[in-house]
Amino acid sequence: MSLFVAPADPARIPAIATMLSGKLLRNAIVNSAADMPQGDIDVAIVAGDAVRDALLRKAGIVFLGNSITGGGGMAPYDAASAGNAIVFGRNMQSHQDVARRLVEQRGARMVDDAKALAVAVRDLLANPPLAQDMAANAMTTILQLRGALALTRNVLQPYVARCWSRRACTAEPRCSVPERAKRRPQPHEIR
Image (spheres, rainbow, N blue to C red):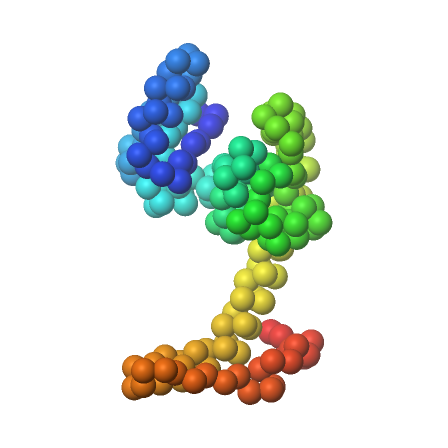
C-alpha cells in the first residue's frame, strides 16, 4: 500500500472511492485496524480517527488536505506529533501561525499546486534522510508550541474558573484579569 487518504468528512468516502476507481487505483475503505487491507491496494481510505492515528504513526510523509484548494488546511498537530514530514499548500488560514513556524523551522514544505505537491513528495521519498530531518523538525516545533499552550492554560485557568463560577451565580459576570497575568512571562517562568 502506498497511500492513505483520511477525509475530514466521512460522508465523502464513497465519492473518493469512486473517483479513485475511475483512475484505476485499487482502493479499500478501512474502518478499523483489523480491516487493514492485505495485498495489492494502491490507496486505503481511512474512516475513523483511531485508524487515522495508527496510520499517522507509520506514514513518514503527510499532506494536509484543504490547503491547496483554499479550504483553510487541516490541522498539522497530529501529523507532526506522530513524526512525519509535512507538506501543505498555501491556504493554511485555519492554522497559519503553526504553518509559518513549521516552514521556518524546516518541519514542513509549502507547495503552490498539485504538480508541486507531486514533486515535493517525490523528493522526500527519494531522500529519506531529508524526510527524517523534516519530521524531527516538525515534531520539535509542535512540542515547543504545546509548551506555550500549556503555559497559557495554566496562567488563565484560575481566572476562567472564577468567571465561570460567577456566571453560574449572577446574570452578568464581571471578570477581571490581574496585571501580572497581562504581562509577558519571563524566560525563567516558562517550563
